[in-house]
Image (cartoon, rainbow, N blue to C red; front, side, top):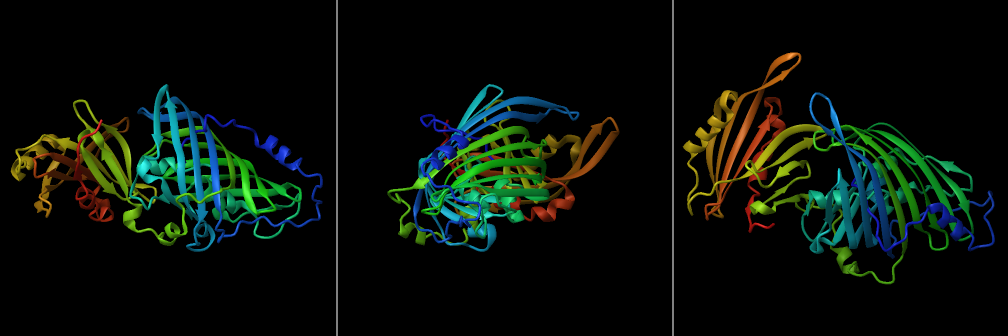
Length: 465
């Protein structure tokens, strides 16, 4: 779940006040005996306009050795403004929830320990397909691959599509409660592996034109292998005349440990959502919807990683996560980690390498000697070596090495067997980049050649600031 932000020109208001104002518009109140239907059709062809304003406050927990953690102040705001239309269901339960969106705004501003960063949606990726899964909403763009930053940005807390799963499957009366299916709280919170969960909804108020539903729940489990606990409370308004969700306020309280990829978190996330019928479908025409497949291709779900200052670009699966990157200084490196089913499989250190002469590259013999020198006492033996010629003129050297990593602690010293797979890639113009994959021997089969797949996606592009 990403941190969050509001449209500065829109005044945030409490949902309680909004509910009261709406309910006062009618003079007649539904009685407790009236059965009410709350449902948006899966085949609804109307276009909706949604604004979502999100604020986050709390702490980021960063490991600093010996089990200690640094606590860094976190504050973030997010603004979303988009049109949406429903897409045909791709299956049952969560998979029945699908829509395509055209974003007018998607901007995240985050401040951690006083350092501010901003992430927004690129202008050439404004069309986004959102599909429900048990583990959360899956976003991709038919306009091209997204980056990890963009995918994280589009994880909208209190997303309108997730909130629709809270609605009851049968008619309910004022004061009546219901328990949504267990996948609903999982999708609403993005937890991948569930230990315990609970979620309860209640029809709190109703008039002939509007209904208010309150909900609260808690889930404990793992996200990217990290222990995470999320509590969620909120309320939503539903228009009974035209049968659609109009407003919602959702509050998340999230705690998570320091993980393989992400820092620990202790934060509160508040989402205020407003939704109405749009006057125009914008770019979301019937022709566009007809071109969106039920199941996206692996290529469409793939992500781009651009190391702009180096002029290097990769395409990778969503199992690869950027752990950290330093684009300048004496040892520039980007570290990616392959995480599968919550467990670390391999780490990739990716860096620019000194250029060679045009049409040439570092020799295999020198590359192998450099590897042995850099590993020092960790070096064991060379397992394999090869040169991989490519049709586009790039050249690739690959050397696999075995050895040991020494880990020292208060309990003593341990030698951990390790395999390293080194790559050097050269362009026809002599530009070079290097990769080092670290993987423990029992995980080599699980890595399953994904090191080579990642390396071969490398593109040399013009550097950017």
